Length: 79
Image 1: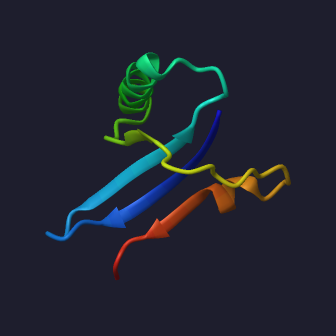
Image 2: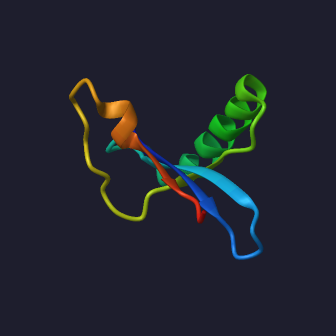
Image 3: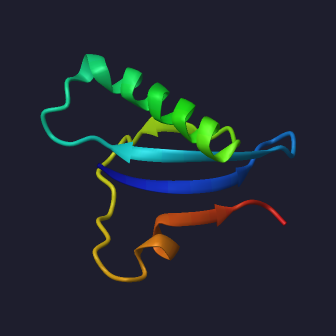
């Protein structure tokens, strides 16, 4: 499972955190939304934050170095 997390500011000024996931090849299309929903529920129960989990529309970059965490998460909030 490959992912990128983003924090953004919505048009009304609220903050939104979401994770785009790239499912492994062979993951059935009819199961992807259920997997994303379960992941979002788990993140909420563990972190106490609402994090939307969505399927990526395009392939995501792959990170394999020691700085992956910093590059996987992007703060795109307006200041």
